[in-house]
Length: 73
Image (tube, rainbow, N blue to C red; front, side):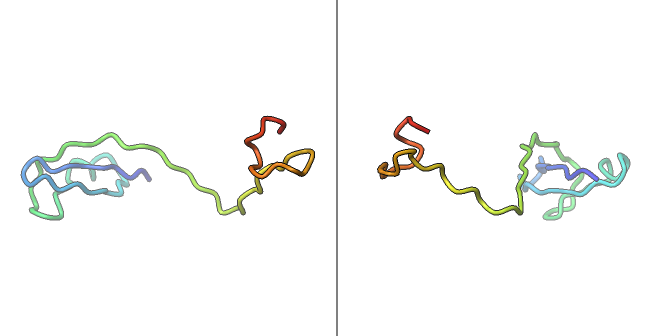
């Protein structure tokens, strides 16, 4: 089920709406003022991972103070 972002043309409120069917998107009203004068906004996609962060690569010689920055990695 996609989440759509909207902006109300009446009051300027920006909000997200979980849309189960296309008909639900047409019935969406502003949660702030209740108007149906909405404009769908473009949104960016973001993905996360629950896996642990990988450690930064270290310098092959072991003497680099800034791993990954010396160009040897």
